[in-house]
Length: 433
Ligand SMILES: NC(=O)c1ccc[n+]([C@@H]2O[C@H](COP(=O)([O-])OP(=O)(O)OC[C@H]3O[C@@H](n4cnc5c(N)ncnc54)[C@H](O)[C@@H]3O)[C@@H](O)[C@H]2O)c1
Image (cartoon, rainbow, N blue to C red; front, side, top):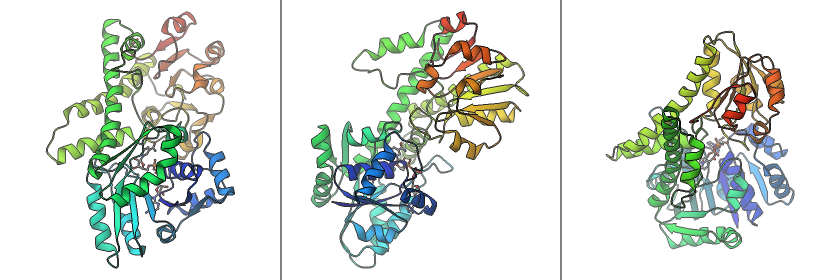
């Protein structure tokens, strides 16, 4: 089947490559000329394990192409996925201008039946707005359908998730749309054995915001428990392990730490709170989730400040810039908060990440960047660990201690055992232990 994807960012590119992998012919469109030029030369704009190899294979096979023309994308395929950004607006609401623009442009170029599929994470009832937009801007009375197909992939394991999802959610209004998407996803359903859920568009849209908000709630819940642990002498790692073995709870997303970041959870929780407010429901539990998350990073910063007394002129190493391992995505990463606050306080920063240095340097060019974590901590008065990269877990702690001016470690990911760190001579602060 031929498929167009408008928006070739994290989701659009991974989705396009994975659709090609299951045998479809894919045209990925983006209005960022530089990005499309890079992709045409097989230079990946993001780091995601296995992506370069997958894209290269399918470009070489002629199954995956890139274009800056939405007109070409509209003519190329009957099915057009919308995978543009839905960033937070000034009041926490999702900025729908990118999605709306794609709707308008597709409508202007449509000459035959088209199925527009929302892949971007959108507020409930976006489908209705998109339908109105297409009706308003299409030149003639051309038949079309709208569908919702929210994306649940996780950065850092995006390809595995896209090809082996826990479920595929499809929201449609017509049998025609349902059967096109059923056919499109058949190879993934066959391979992975996952369920394909067909529902109405609003329910599909809401499933995505509700899922992300629930996961964020699990993280904030365990972070709140970690605070009680700190006040009582209990150990959050033991508590989380004890909770997670209960099958009704499950172990995932029960890791206490510096709080969630990334391009999805913060904005999706904000948007969900806002949507609920707009329809007259005060989603108080999610407001607490937001507050706990903000507080978590402040609390770690406070531990650092208390250790250093005066931050100005101190050299601080930040280990881990990506919001999570396996990606170079730094959107809403805790590292941005620490860099901003520490630079404001006139600290000298030394920064390390295995893949995100370049993206971080685009925001903060002045600090020193390192490719070796031990070099990064050389001469530092303190090190702050913010991403649970395996390279940090495997650090040679004797070398780290020898390299640092003061062996103070603030660990936002609970990578080490506090007793062991103390025995090695570190002043070690982590979360909930
Ligand atoms: N990143 C994730 O892990 C993830 C997971 C699930 C869902 N989502 C959702 O998917 C959507 C996309 O997220 P992303 O992380 O891929 O964003 P992104 O910023 O990486 O990519 C968006 C792309 O859309 C392009 N674009 C914007 N307007 C355009 C237009 N008019 N025509 C053509 N291209 C246009 C941009 O240039 C950019 O390349 C968001 O709604 C996000 O919430 C993201």
